[in-house]
Length: 367
Image 1 (cartoon, rainbow, N blue to C red):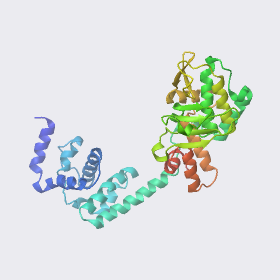
Image 2: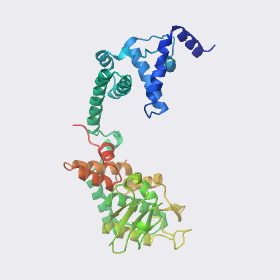
Image 3: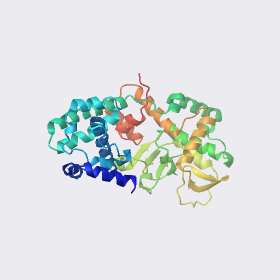
Image 4: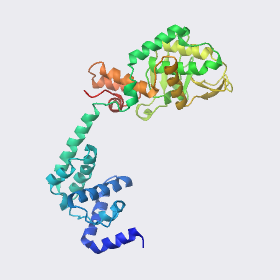
């Protein structure tokens, strides 16, 4: 007989039949809620752990992994959590996230059991913890030590970018020698992130270029830039991006400089192998050896090209496209007090929700 079977046998001698009702109670409770199996397991673990903290280990022969067995032995009346002061004292030294987990199951379970007074105590505590956690998140600590150590303001990056363009001439595009195509591709990708907005790098993987017509009428499996020699009536269209189900197709005008830059880049690059005259070219055409082929660079490859350009040409180390996005949003947000309408408008341009914009990307050290 294995250890688990022995454990079950020992417990079966100690378990009162009434206590077995705990499993039925919890099953009935779960049936009223839309809860994933993994979450159900976690709730059971939390109740077992809380019972042990409050009542001691009632089943010393069980292993930690046997929580599902122990769960069936818990008193289904839940009398052991009715002393809310004691429960609070037992939990007070745990992390705020862990405490929230305990109250997240106690409050609704006790309400289901028709114990509204006790449920309200735990519900109020849960609400206070949630507000505290939200307040803490708004302090927006830079979670990447690497980024904190290498932080460069967005304005400083732009200064270095414009200085590079001036030194190189031709708006920053190097000659059309295919051996430096990767540098030019990295420069173009960086130019869009700096001169338009630092959207997620995946939008550039499916970016194509048109020089006339209406890009909003083209295949929606791609994003498009409409550019011209003079830079007028230029636009960028996003069909494929992370939050497209929320915002749908997005189109923006782009500044004249960026339009002319992309036009010159496309016009002067080497012929793309395997592409017919009718096809719309990718913005960042891939190379095989020194030959351009009719494929786009992947998102990781574009990220690498941008990072290499920043390091080798602008002398900015350890900054990724994702970091550019974080830096831009943080600097913009910190310039002055921002109203919600401003945040929503700026988040829209970057393809974010306003909530994600502030919680995930605004990074400032705690005062």
